Length: 404
Image 1 (cartoon, one colour):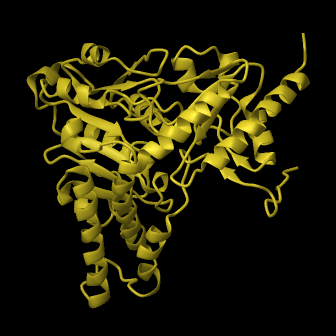
Image 2: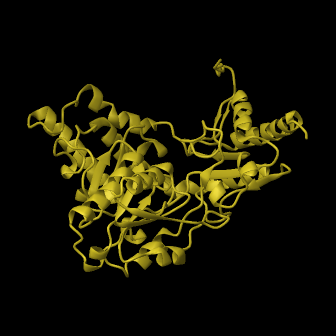
Image 3: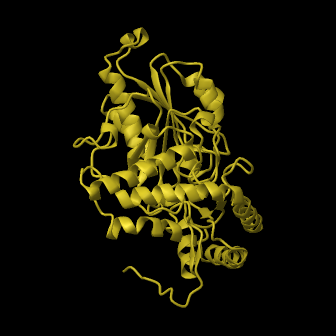
């Protein structure tokens, strides 16, 4: 039986912002007219359609400006997962369709991808699909105990047939910030290799200027930075080869068929505009995160996961000896606190995080993982409440655990 808690009189603390954020009030107001009044299809030539087209292209300009890109290099999608699929499958199919144009590729049957073992499942499963379909070979690079991939390891993994390197900007489970700009500079020495980063957890906190990062493709989704679920984007540098993955109409420069989701696209641009302003104030979130980390580490057997310094401002992640992460989540939820164990896409499954395992955390320890992710509305009082409630939860669970 599933029990639904009554939150009406319960204190509520939301610390699962890495999974999703609430829609910002300004974002909601910006998108509202495109539901009720300016509801036209952006592909139509009449007034309603042209009004919608103006809104879409205006949003494209704003997103491009935030990324230091050109408007024509922005493709609107439904989410980061779709963007990642389009980037990886699109590049590989484009290379295959080019018919092994480079001499070195005439000696190989399949293009080669370099990625890491700690990527989001959207990257890992897309790469595995390409492998199983016989379309690509993939190298999954290891990371160190902090979740960092080595630039040297990326360089060493490159082969003559390598066409794509894909390394996430910020790990969604432990918050480690990867050396994207350094990898980008290294790859500039090699022609014919395209560089993708999943910037989903970085958009509202870190510099995502595509030229500074040296990336050719950058994927993101709106619901991680106060836009609604169901809209995302992909930056594609001019000249990067890409084959569309959704056939139909000629929307999004012929690279993503389907009627544009005008209100959500407007919302995405507004949210990104607001997040650019918020980057300046991110020190508040970072200070609260550090207070939270210090408090949790007072619990015996609690250990920080991810890098202590090279970490996104909003993610605090731990392992806690002697408890199951899922049990901690349920007891926190009983006290009105939202948290996560591992990534949001796998927290419903009782298996150890692939990220923690790749970092060398033993499986039995990885089961005790806890991720607390802050947002712009997180308060000092909320952090104090969590630090008050978490220690007795851990103590109780340890007392309940069977002893051998």
